Image (cartoon, rainbow, N blue to C red):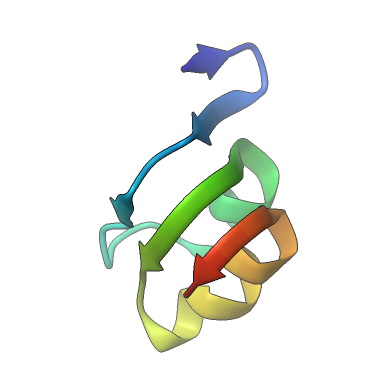
Length: 58
């Protein structure tokens, strides 16, 4: 779901974040909620933890 602030991912089993997405962009434009697993690079992991709510595994 896209909104004026970015992208919201909700109720997803598996989310892959492309390696080219900068961690700052994740913090600024991404919301993740109620997802089982988020696959990302080591550099993105901290940003993902910042924007993720109720995510089982990163």
